[in-house]
Image (cartoon, rainbow, N blue to C red; front, side, top):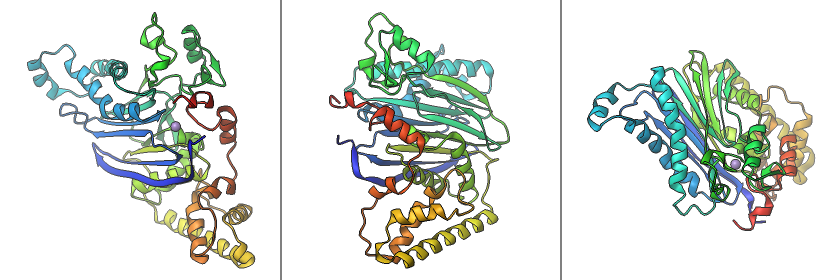
Length: 415
Ligand code: MN
């Protein structure tokens, strides 16, 4: 089945910026998949009237990129239109909106409702467009001066880190969750091989109109629903960072591993793009076969670069280089990347990046090897999966889902 490339597309799209007291960066990578179907949106200042609030969202498309792209371009506008039109005449709104801030709890509650309405409205709007069976998850966060609003639909995930711990994390919408299964069965469907009707791996999504055709049921009761879960979390001074990512990241790293790894990179890089890029490289080395996107939002209390951590990392890198050189000396021209990786794992090198492990050093290992053996003939990239132990979670996922993370093989032919 042609859903994977011979070697991963490692080119990364990155950007970074700051505003409203936040620093942020984004990185996305196509990886092993034939198509790039992820999309994202970053907005510092929601509108001229809500300048002090910002928006970050990740969309993980499947069966095409139409719905993910369209949602990344229009979801926020759809929500803001509903909000700005809400019971105000045009004159009133221009006067009133200047004072708008989502700090008033009444206004915040109204805004929350508009987010849910916005998800359902854009889903209805796209139905008339040529979506070609595509669908997307959506995880969006609205960062106001004192709150973070999380809106989640599907199995992408947003996590707020405070003092090295999870302060809040969204819940994935998997078909086998009790609440989801009930809705699916009430709509006449079933959950097989952990998928909706044995095919779709998420139970909430925008698009996927083949799963939204029960004539007597409202949109929120269909096999697949576009209704997001909404959570409003109070910000505090010691919040460190917010991270949004699609399942290409979460499939190979736990929440705690991501927290530890990001924390360790923030001690080394002031450039947040670099932090995001290394996270995706590490996920690729850990065996992720999916498109990957990550947005990192840094709050003032986040760890800052420390000279001590930078020195430690430099020592670690030199140690790894030395070990690689030693192995090449020992094995000569027959040295392969696989051998080196296996050898390094047996060295028990201390101070490897927490949450990242030796996999987070794969690029360094390859570069070192290339420098010593410029003519080494080895299939690059393809060796990566076999060179490092595939995490248990990945094996389980492959066993459950076949090769395609979003759509089971049974459905792949008619995409
Ligand atoms: Mn995915």
